[in-house]
Image (cartoon, rainbow, N blue to C red):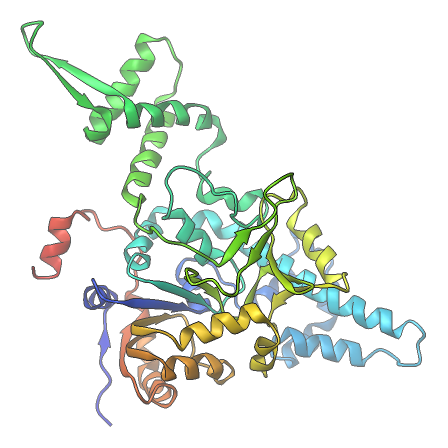
Length: 442
């Protein structure tokens, strides 16, 4: 067998530039952003995190069962239900109680992990993730969480938080509100000045005046102009807050219009009143974000697939608990590790997501997937599509086994592996077009 070579992350970005590309992510993508949402880590939080809702956790009592279940939540629930005496008159209630509460606790633990790490996702070390995301027409995730969606929306709009963003509680508005609330009051005024303000320069003669828009001047001069404006008008803005606000505005300018299209397939149908509902349109031709195994914010209500959004005044946990306890509603999440395709076929949203894979052409980048057999339904769709080339991340020590598995999963495709450890989302010091063209040899 020939020696398997590994591309570097930067090489992948160069090779896919200006081509038709699609992205598929697994849990390893989250870990690359500093968020471990693996099943094992979620259960570890349920068992061991004494500072959370699981203090004095009853999950400590079933730790061995969790381990022997391979951290498979559906298998664990089955074991717990089987332990209930069927002669107990309350057995039906107890089984449903276990089913609902273990799933709710699992989702709460996952949310708690994301909540504690979300600031790190938008930290300086990850600012350059848009250099990856801007290359793709379609985005697919095997994960249940919202990190990919939050990132996409972050780079879609620099102006405001959209109405249909998922309400993962106010804590996950951090991708807009990462700065301290103390300087939020000055943000709008400085942003307006940046958009519409001007600065005048006088050289000698009073008639020799030049005028330039504030959005065309460099950072240091912009900060100095704001400080002078505050001094003249006796506005007590602290210098550190001015600098933070300017950093935020300039960062948003870099991101503006990087991603012009982010469509998860949901549309608002109740236009009046406070009870706005977003329902997934399974016939949408513009959808380009797909949760292949569902997600915590997607639920089935009768024949409709709906989305939990910030328009709801209720906390996420309360909404999830209501849905789990309802006979007509259910969270659209495939928790089981086996026979996922059966569950997919029973849900129109998931069917739409899976079938979309078979319609693709061009290139696909896969980050953070182990190519496990229980996801073969995904890989079969990709292999049957018109995708030409796959770029798959892997660790250097696993490159031989990964390549062998990839050849089995995708026998009709050209396969390139790239080093997962070479992935860096740190924004290069100079990202203007000249630098990018030089890097590509143009």
